[in-house]
Image 1 (cartoon, rainbow, N blue to C red):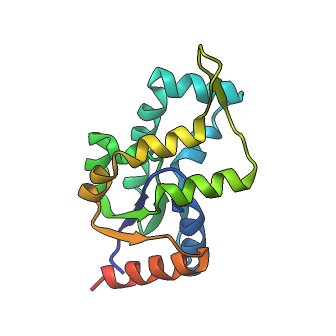
Image 2 (cartoon, rainbow, N blue to C red; image 1 turned 90 degrees about the horizontal axis):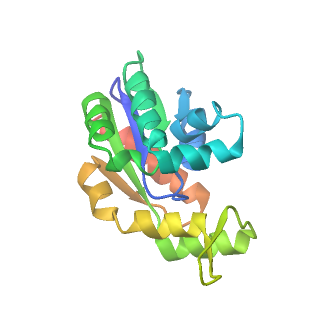
Length: 178
C-alpha cells in the first residue's frame, strides 16, 4: 500500500461507509465519512435539508475533503455521493490518493431500501404523489455513473454480500500498492 489516502466514491447506499469502516478497521487505518462529518455539525435535521438545497452541503464537502487530503499518513475516506461530481473535490482526491468507485446496481439499491421499511424524508408533489428522497437520490446519482467511472482509479462491483464487497475492497487496496 502506498502512503496515501483512499477515497471511496459511488452513488448513495453503494457501500462506501459500510465497506470503508470495515476495511479501515481490518487495516488499522483511520476512517472518515465526509457526510457524517457534516451532519455532526448540525443542530437540527432540517438544517441538512436547507444546506443541501442552498448549496452549502457541497461547499462543506470541499472544505472537509481539502482538510482530509492534507492529513499526514494513510486514511480511508468515504465521500458523499456529490463529491465525485464536484471538480474541486475530484481534483483534491486525485492529487492526494487513490479514488475507488464502489458500484452497486441501482435496482438492487432501490429494492434493498424498500425492503428496509425506511421511508426517510418524503416530499409531496402538487398532484399528491409522494417522492421518497432517498430513492430519488439513488436514481439521480445513478444517472451520473459515467462521471464516477471517469474519476476512479479503481472500481469494484458491490452486488454481492457485504463480506464479498469487503474482500474485493481489501484486495483492490492491497494491489494498488504494486
